[in-house]
Length: 548
Image: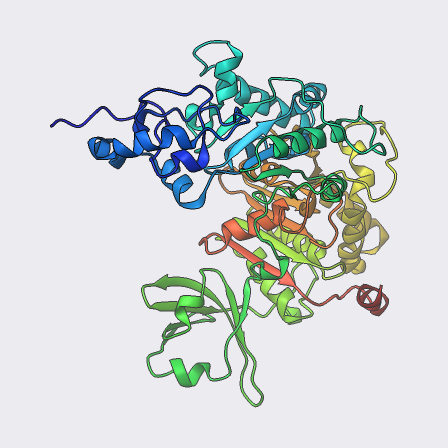
């Protein structure tokens, strides 16, 4: 007996065990077999429980459709095992934040209220990141709507398969609001406000489909609080979060156990190249190491070990000892490391094999000063890079000062106070040249530093440049990707930021672009990361960061 044709569309067949529990057809069908039951008008449940009547007929025909059931899609099997799929109602800010959020809900369905489409239409103009995201959402919705065979409301009400545009991970359907939903809300909530209209849609869907879990998804905390106050389930959009807890973020530094040499010393191999010592180790610690991770062993009455993992092959790893930038003879443009983490950071910054470096830490840990010193040393002394490019996100801490006059560099001037402060510190190193010599040095240094705005980065390519991205914690993952992909041959990119000082709306420590970059680049042979722990700005700043 030949096998029947496979299903033409995803989720077009349903197992018989799921049929009476999940869906009920709008019109009773006389002898409809279970394998050809419609997936069917999920949002058109009839008021009367008429599902029990046709359930016996499909069950009786099960044996004749065994081959077809073997080809049943994964979503149907999930629905049979876990009950009906959830229905997620998306707030506008979710789509503005992540234009691909429609396809992040796996086997569950997505519902878009009409007011959400209205709000998207109001934000589509402009050159901001939000406007670009809205236009991308509109294009995705247009492609999904193009999969419709007809323009009738009946077909629209059945839902659009989210996998129809090639996103195979999305096994659910997209539903638009095709009718007026007039659900009375408490008198204290104004009916005309967009958030309250979305809450009314969620309340109506919950009452219409008591067998399904209807959940509001919003990035707006107040919106979620109002929903819960009305007894409606609400969740944050968590798919954009790299980590749920920022304490789990990769630090780039690992302390070796006190018995490291006892457990790994029997099989260790060591050799020297110049002033650098290499160790090849094998043992229980190797699986926990990553390439370019920095390790240290400090024990009383023993020589400390500071090394970097340069290679991991099978069950063995190669450690390379680090240069001591805490000594004055190894000073970088007059700057020396004051603690262990700063020494680790300078080793990465001065390594020509590291193309991408991220430095995180609280205020006053020396991120900008060390990066700028390393950049100047490699531009002027080593001639490794042609110039330094500095950029940052222009998100104000307080009230915005409005439009600024001048060129692009002059407009960025107020945002680059940290750069000026650090250049002033670095310029003091050449005091022997006198006032005229310092002025000439400052002019030469500033001629090699270009200040650029993030708004004009798209489409550019940096060749042989040292790029510094300051305040990178305010970048979204999409903006971070845009910046990192600007790198051409011979370019090094350094991202600096403090995850405790995020000023961009809807960004958290878990969803910041800096967290995203640290997590994605860990273990790559040409990247490095260090979390700077100790502040070196002043005793006043250190005490303030602890007690305030």
